[in-house]
Amino acid sequence: MTPKDFSALRARLLAWYDAHARALPWRVGPADHAAGVRADPYRVWLSEVMLQQTTVPHATPYFLTFTRRWPSVSDLAAAPDAEVMAAWAGLGYYARARNLLACARAVAADHGGVFPNAEEGLRALPGVGAYTAAAVAAIAFDRAANVVDGNVERVMSRLFAVEEPMPHSKPALKALADGLVADDRPGDWAQALMDLGATVCRPKGPLCDRCPVSDFCAAFARGDQDTFPRKTKKADRPRRYGVAYLLMREGKLALVQRPPKGLLGGMLGLPTSDWRATGWTDAEAIAAAPVEAAWRDAGEIEHVFTHFALTLRVFRAEGAMRADEWAAGRGLEALPSVFLKAAVAGLGRLL
Image 1 (tube, rainbow, N blue to C red):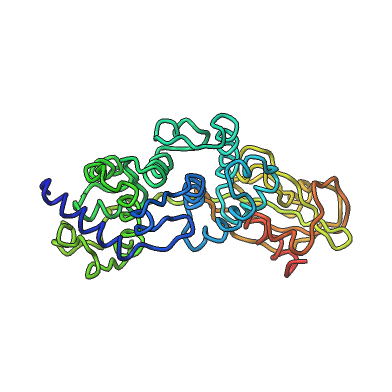
Image 2 (image 1 turned 30 degrees about the vertical axis):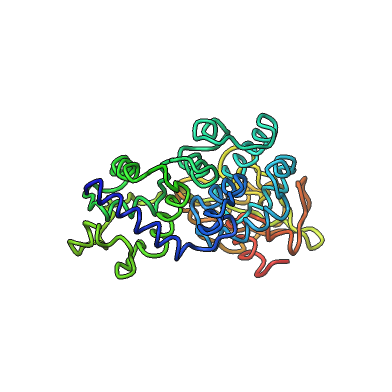
């Protein structure tokens, strides 16, 4: 692709974005941006953290809840950990929620509540990696940053028919995307690529007849665009086994706070056994229970985390223990999804 092609490709995609940009609650659209409106760095940062490993429809109600409760980064920084973690429940990857708070508090304490306006300063914040720093720099501050997410990788792999399989091709795809970055409208460019990948250059069944840059696409010219990006075969996800305990007292359920670090760190959840590579017998499950009680088998659930699958047996009893909270009804809806599933399985419904 020649420099002239690059220029034509950018012009086509930006014109398409001007006409077809998604309306998102954290986004300043291209018309408003051209009129001088600038995105709020707090909202851009918050949305990018939430969108990691999830979809726009799933993240949107969380974003709206967060920005209603904590409309500025300083408001979020002052929020109690437990409230933020509870509001995050259901988005998964709970280390992100802890990093969210750490970053907000660093911006409030060390930067007067104002985000740094360049990648280097953003990268110095807790929990902010290369992608998030580039996204905030480009979208909020119009810096010519190379913003590469999964959508952009897919677009690059097809535009240039990159044969090397993922994830080994990531550096090459990032370099190809960097060659298209320019000082002209860098924030709009980043969002245009994201929108193209999300709505047209989709993982399956790309809508090439609607693509504004199909004339430049090497994979489309070959007719095998569906096969990109190339992928290596994934290793089988390992399985672990555990037990969750539903201890009832006066119609409420015992919840405990998990250790601050590790999977689901800092979240309220059900008491559990260790999660190990072998299953649990009834005797082992009862011996590992948090208190002595008339424990009985109440079912089993399956849950998939990023790096392993979990089979969780559920045991139920009446009794008392030193719990961090006794919850009923809506109090259970804020539980991480694995514990919500276990509660529903063991109780038949929420209290």
